[in-house]
Length: 163
Image (cartoon, rainbow, N blue to C red; front, side, top):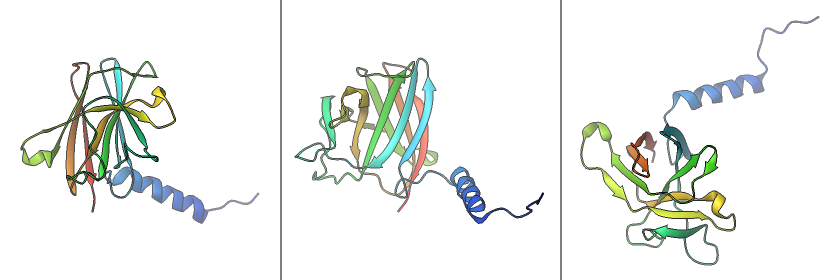
């Protein structure tokens, strides 16, 4: 029987990638961010994605209710899609009052910004993909986000938007 004392290069590379994913903060421009927290009866998954379209033949999102979506061609130039997926007992919550606020550089203090929340679902995929949020313009930096559902205590998240 032969014993190997060296790691196979593919296994070693996979291990380095896994360690890097744990050690490095979430950076929005490098990849999509997804963080999950449980508050009361709800599990909230915050996602920070590239801005998505709500209009036209190739619309990615279908707004169901709530605030007006920030459109890709809007004056404020949204560059991210900041959304919360809400589940209860493993099932999508299709009708909820969701409040989302965010702050750039939470350590420095400052004002929290309320995000006008749109209830939406992925075009062609139905209400099982219901989520809440909006497109938003985020400059590089560290952000804090608070999400509350139906008046619950807020779930808190933190992520970094890269260049």
